[in-house]
Image: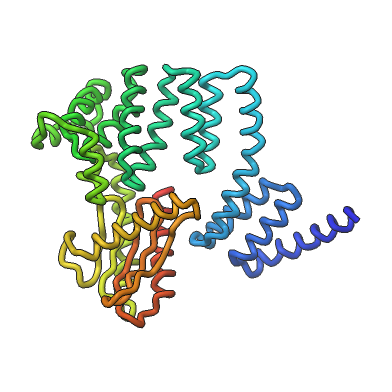
Length: 367
């Protein structure tokens, strides 16, 4: 019976492989990946998911398949590292394990692993840095004060145990500046300048920061909570890489075109694409103080936070109805796309277009 089942699966596999070549679609790639999983062929599953996403980059099903295959593939390595840690723990093994969780996108496991490493090796700068990165990612996504303050504390610890850690100093300088702590940011930027005297971007940032007014006393707790209340960071990035800035300019052009297309749909009055503290707008929007932008930020943040606290999944898109018509919102992490449209507008089509806009912009950021 097992042999017959296996033969049937192999026959189905050949059929699906032919179908993928002849009439590719997200569902066909997912079906093919599932058969590969049933046969224990994880490398082939990953290859099928990657190929499918190249053709259909907005497919949520293919992204789930890719994530599942990666987890299955890395489960063995994670289990092996755990066994080695139980026998003879070392900071190096903890770093390897944390990196596997980073590859899986499991920020909770990264945080737990780093904290376990710090309890056993309290002077390991790398563990503090990796934990700070995870906290920073959460802070920039949700603007949660606790994550931001913990990130600063961990970065300061990493620098304490490794004073020449350029990466930690860069991250600390950025997060302090972007939350409004200009004076504290200037202090760490000066230390960074001493370590990287040939970096022109750091020199330009230092000149810019020296000319900006700063308070004699900065309460980080107050500043981080003010960021949460405002729903945005106080400043944009301080230190920019030239290559990164060039790539972002190209991506912004693509996003602007897609947003303009959405703004031309029937019944659409206002459209926006928001990433962190910045926003692109189209339609009947006068400036950055438009109440529509404020409503979009608040609704997206509240929905994401409620879903996370209730442990019911992630909020990705939705529609808010009122006397004004409809507000369609699509979001992922710190990226939000939204539309204000008239009653009776095709909200399903608008949500689909918004979701494609967000997904395509995220793909460009990853590359």
